[in-house]
Length: 243
Image (cartoon, rainbow, N blue to C red; front, side):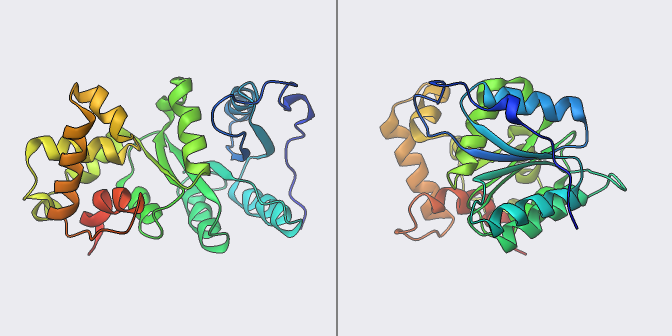
């Protein structure tokens, strides 16, 4: 079955416009609102990234990624709405979970109008690399949104602060975090948003060394052993999701 995707020749990155920092990433956008889909495409293209397909439903998303993969041309990241046709319930997030299973190297960033805890948990329950969950309002903060796309494409994590706050506030999981100090909880929340130690230090107006100490204490208290690299940062905020 062929899947119709938006033709995007007019959205190719202008010559010489590739990002001066992180490499340009290849993106597939799945959003049933044509206006928003085109807006995201232009926003990313203007910053030197490449939107290789734009689709309006979950079936077309799976088809487009499958066709690219068959040509050994898998994109770096998919940006998908949680709710998509035909029922506008969970088609988008289910497609995202399936794509993460079928293509482990593919980053997935889902967008939602509201914090939907069940969908966030489902998406985060598997591998914690290359995954993001943002509220659509975050798209208006252009730099943060583009940074999130690039971070997820590179295997990192991007969680909306409101998503983090709601998940960390689940009463049945509070015992997992009971040993953390208020400052350590604050650092943990910022870690979950995908911020580096330096960015956390700037946010809290403390030294990098102080943040490193807090992060080390968090790992220790949550029972995360050394040697996991950056993966431990994600595990630290997902530990409470274990049933």
